[in-house]
Image 1: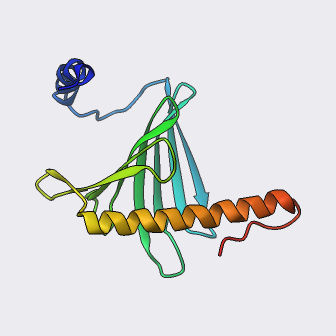
Image 2: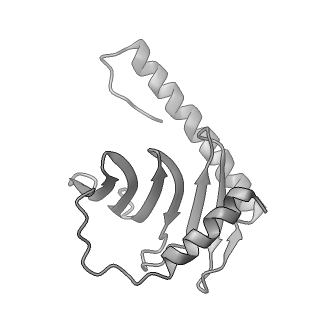
Length: 156
C-alpha cells in the first residue's frame, strides 16, 4: 500500500467519525451562488480562504429537460474528484477521477450499499471516445475564435 495513503487513512478515519456539522459557521469558508436563468442551472462554488474547494451544479441541463446534479472537489484549485446524481434522487451514483489532460480519466459506479466498482469497460470506452470527440470539436471552435476574434463560439 502507498505510504501516503497509510498516513492519510488514520486521519480520515478520525475526521469521518466526527459528528455531523449542524450549524456551519466558519469565517474562512465562503460560498458563491450563480444562477443562470436562461439555462435554469445553479452553480454553487465553495472556497476556503481564496482556494476553490467544491463546486456544485444543479438544474436543467438542456432543452430535453435533463436534470443535472453534479459536484466536484478540488485540491489546490485542481479538480480531483467529481460525482453525479444521474437520476436526481439525491444519491450520487457516478464518480469520475480526472487526469492531467482532458481525455485522461477513470470512472466508477457507487452502488446503493455504498460500495464502488469500476464502470464496465465497454461503457468506459464509449465515454472515452465521446469525450475525445467533444474535445476535438471544442478545440476546433476555440481555434476558429482565435483566428476570427469577432465571431461567436459555435460548437457543432
